Amino acid sequence: MFEACLTLAQNPNEAQLLAESLEAVARALREWPLEAWHKVSLTPTGKGLFERLVARTQPAALDSRQRVIALESAEAVAGVLRVLWPETRPRVEAEPDLLLTTS
Image 1 (tube, rainbow, N blue to C red):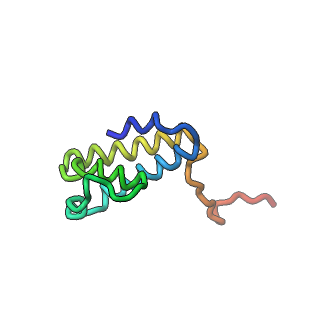
Image 2: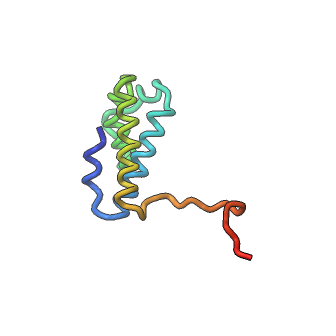
Image 3: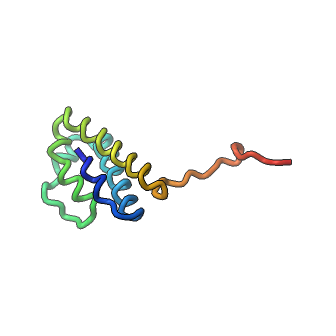
């Protein structure tokens, strides 16, 4: 469903914006109740990518089978973008007790 987004990124910043927006859409698909999706306008009111993606995803979110497909697609494409553009991966802070020390 979101596979076409793979061809949009031309640099790491665009890849990060796409990956973050798709991850946010996946969270919305997973967490928003059906009532919230009924309230989504098909014409996005905001100028952000997330708002546009949510508006375009609304019909799929209302169908339980399509919702699962959209969720899996959004997560997969975000993951592939992070692999193609490694600099977009979120940094994970190392926990102090996991750090190797030399003494």
